[in-house]
Structures are given as structure tokens and as C-alpha cells.
Image (tube, rainbow, N blue to C red; front, side, top):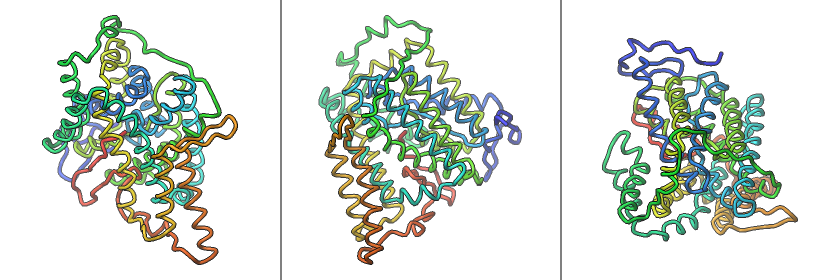
Length: 453
């Protein structure tokens, strides 16, 4: 029932051509542990960048990513292999909320987002996903993902300018590693670039080790309780739409690669991620999401065993109990973060555009064109609208604009017979791609992850 029984695949050592190790199977424990540790390496760079950028304790975020992954595996009964790492969609709202109410106020927003995601998961479990597809067709989903990425640009610029040489070395390293290396190293280009940039920063004396020297080798990660302010709800609730798209895309991707129907588990996946995000926000960690990096590892190894994810989750938990390790991660200087963020934030924005391309969104249709145009300008310009104690900024207003403009214009256009409207069914299933832009080649070639959390 809990999905913690795995049949040994074959001889436990080899995977024959055309076969995969299914979620409820495993290789020998020695090989399973090795693959689990590889999953930790795959998620490491992106998971740690979020707390470094937002100022949250890295060890706490790592702790809750491990807890969240275990919860996900239990709630989905071990049938969906997934690692829950830090979501980049939370960076902008956390920064905005922290500037008003401090970290505790931002954590309250994370809890709110997780609760709403869990509620949506419960509805999906009983009513299916069709209503979500109608609410968020590709033009809307792409616009929301794009504006969240581009809204973060000022943060990347600020960190980049803090140490331009270090930032440039980090950026160039990420670019070169991406195209110079194949396999797992190529997938970990962001982590590799951060390491190279860190060495350069260290040689320039930009790294402060004072906090690390004072930290203990073993101890609990620092926890913090949230504060709740209704005014931050508008910052965080739009993030839920991105998390929904990422989770549904993850389930579809794994279903394709394992040749299994996992649609009945979509609601459970959303509820599990919602619970993980609530737990993280309740204790001082970043909100979570399913990770494309780990799907890439599965596609490369053809091992979809949830046993490997138990290993990854337990490994993450063990690492989180070393304050010295967390303090080491926190020494990454602003210049390195600026170089990495330049790539990451741009990728998030372009992933939104990729959703449009893969679903062949028709921009000759004025409904689509207007939806994208207005929402992107509102998001990138960080328009702000205060109503009493409530303050809505770029992401919230841009998301609202995308939903209201698309559905409002579609309704009026159908009534008046004026502009063309999207037929969601025309787009549905055209590409074997998940909703955050990760593409699957169903002919059997390699999965190409977005390298984003």
C-alpha cells in the first residue's frame, strides 16, 4: 500500500535493450544506492540556488526537500518516481514578500500556495484534469511561466553587477559545459558553472568562511515559523498555476517513458506537492516542485525505480543535519549567483515561449496575441496595484491579466463571431511534452530536460 516493496528487475544487474526498471522494481541495492546518490547530484544545483537567492537557510531547504520527497512517494503509493526540489517560481514572490514582512511573511505565502495546490489536487483526484486544461490552455500557461522568469531579471542584474568578472566566468562556464559534455555532466552544467565560478571568486577573495568555521559538524537545520499576511496572497497564488503545470507534465512524462497510465494519480501528485510545500513553508524551507533534472537521470539510466528516490531523499536528509555543510553552501557569493541566475531566469522565461511553440499557438489570432502581450508587459514591468491592505504586483497582475483577457475575449468573440478562438482540443496531445516545456522524443531518443526546478 505504501509502495515500499520492489521486485528485483531481472538479475538485478543489467537492463536489456528495450526494457526499463519500472517504478515498483529495483536493481541490486548497491546499484540502487548509486543511482539514488546520482539523483541527489542532479537536483543539488537548482535546489540550493533558490535558498541562496532568497536568503533562506540551505540546510533547511534540503531537509524539507527530503521530507517532501518521502511524502510524495508515500501519497502516490510508490508509483510515480519523483524528487521534490526548490521551485524557482517562488523566488520573485518570496523576494517581494520578504521586503515587506521579512522571511516569516514570505514563508506564510509559501504555506498559502501549498494549501491551494493541495486543494486543487483534491479536486483533480475526483473531477479529473479536463477543467484545468480549459482554464489554462497553452497560451495562458506559456504566458504565466514566461512572465515569472522575466519578472526576475532585475534580481539577476543586481547580483551580476556585484562582481561582474566572477559572474561572467560563471555564465560562460555554464554555456560551455552545456555544449562540451554529454551525459550527466552536460545535464549538470549549472552546478558545474557554479563550482567554477566559486573557485574564481575564492581566488579573488570574495568568499567569506567565517560562518562556516563557527558551524557545528552535526546538528539540526535552523527552523523558522511563518507569519500570515493576507496582502501577500496575490504574490503567491499565481505560482500555484505553474506548479500544477509542472506536476501534470511530470506525470505525463513518466507515463510515456514507462508505458503506464498514471493519470489516475495526478490528483495525488498535486496533493503531495501541496503538502510538501506547506511543510516547507511551516519550517523555513522553500516551496517545492517535481524536478526535470531527475527525469533526465531516469531517461538516461532507464531506471524509474522509486527505491532510488527513497535513497535520494534519505541522503538529502542526512546532509541537512550538518550545519557546517549548510554554511559552506551559504558562502556562494553574489557574483556567482548573478551568473547562474542570468541563465536560469532567462530559461524560465523562454520555457514559456517554448510551450507556445510546441503547442503551435496561433499568434495571428488577436485573442492569443493580446493575452500574451498584456500579461508579459505587466509581469516584466512589475506593475503594482494596491487595494486597501492588499498589494498585487507583476506576477499576480500578469497572471490575472492572462486569465481574464483570454477567457473574456474568447467569450465575447464567440458571442459576436468576431475574432478566432483557440480550440483547446486542437492543441491537446499534439506533442509529447510536459507543461513546463520538457520534451519527450517518443521514438526512443534521449529525454531533454529544461535543467530547471
